[in-house]
Each structure stands twice: as structure tokens, then as C-alpha cells.
Image 1 (tube, one colour):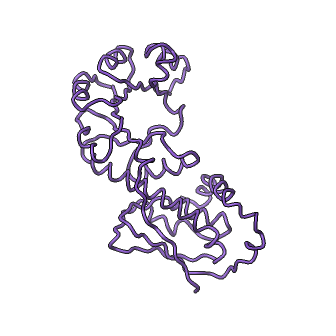
Image 2 (image 1 turned 90 degrees about the horizontal axis):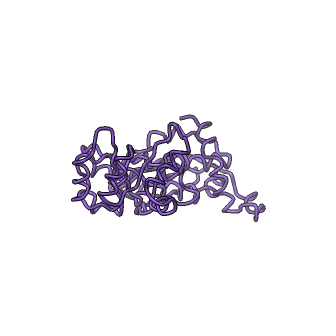
Image 3 (image 1 turned 135 degrees about the horizontal axis):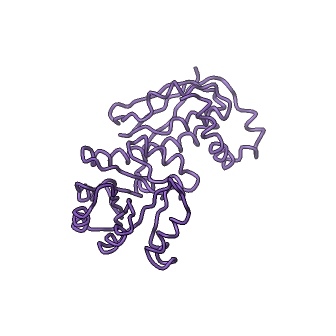
Length: 283
């Protein structure tokens, strides 16, 4: 991936992060920082899947560093062990390293935490043919980073935004007067290539939605026993997604043959933190 493409993709986001840091309040300080080159060491201090290096590098490029993502590309998505005490070395001007390190590390640690968590779910589902999906339960302002991290960790993105897929949820049914009326509303949107998925809450509703010709259904908070009953009715061409409070500790109960996907909001909002630090010294 070229530096230019990465810059264009994430630069506006990076700019927002620096606006938060409000460097313009103390121009004298910024102007006084020495620009001598320092040898930097990115220290990976946990068991983790490293993710977010395009964002990490772009922080320093935004500040004017002549740093090439291709130097880091081979490390993205790699699983590291704490016991190895792995380090990634590179050089930066001291002024840029100091000014960008907190934002760069925040993004890298957050993305790596999510990628690591996604990878743990994927390992559970390995060999089952069941896809592990994220949700739209992402941190405002960080969706692109978090969705990217899920992919690096081996997971799948459910929706990047509301209009990627028409998702009929309980509030739609309540407002429009029922599942039939809600589905008809979304069909009236005439999104020729936009599929409809219906969140169903019991077996009777599954049967109703199936009769309406809907091809994608999410079983919300179904017990494993009820999931198996639904799977026995699953016709060719219908996709069944399972969701609702599923965690690493319980996912084994939901890895049921015939399920196509399991969506887990906790992949993005519940990922345990990972420890990464940046140290640097004079050449």
C-alpha cells in the first residue's frame, strides 16, 4: 500500500486528533523543540496481534516526518508473544517523535487490542465455517480504525454504516406496526443491490419472515436449543446470523452447524487493552 493512499484515507481523521491536542496554544514551545534525529523503539509488551500501523505512521507523516509505511508493513497483522520482547526500530526527529507519540500510541494500542480480541474469537470459530462479525457498536469518531482492526484480526465487518444493508430491528417493527410493515418500508427504498436483514426474536417470527421471502435473518438472544430448531427449517439460500450477549466464554455454545455468522459487539467495545510503548534516544 502506498504512502499516498494511506495519507488520503486517514489524514482527515489524524487532523481531528491533533485538533484535540490543540498545539496552537503554545507556538513558542513547539518552535523550541530540537529536531535532532532519535532512534525509536516500538516495544510490544503483551501477547497481541499488531494492528493500526498505517495510522501510527501517518501521525508522524502528518507532522512532517520522512517515514515510509513500507518499513512497517510486514509487521501489520502479525501475532507477537510477550515473552519475545519484540521491538521495531526506526528514526524520527525528536520534535516529531515527542509531539506525535501519544496520539500514535493511542491509535496503535486501541487497534491492536481490537485485532487481538477479534483473533481470539476467530480461533474459537476456526474450522466451523462460521464468520465472526463486528457491529456498529463502535466509538464515535473511531469507526474506521475499529472496523479496520477487526479485519486485521481476521474478523468480518457487518456494516460500515446504516445504508450498507437495511437492518430491520425491533424499533422499526414497533414504529411501523409490525415486521411485515417494516420490511415493506425498506423494500420501498428500492435499493436494488441493498439486501434486507431482519432481527427476529422468536421462532414464530422467524417463520413469518421466512414466508415474506427475506434471505437474511439475525436470531437475537436465541438459546442454543432454539437456534437448532430454526436451523432445521433453514432453506437453501437463507443466511442465519446469531447475536446477543455472546462472549469468548460462551461462544462455543453457539458454534452450531448451519449458522452462517455470529455478530459480537464486544469485539470493539470490550477488547482488553494491550501494552505497547515507544522509547527513543539520541543517535
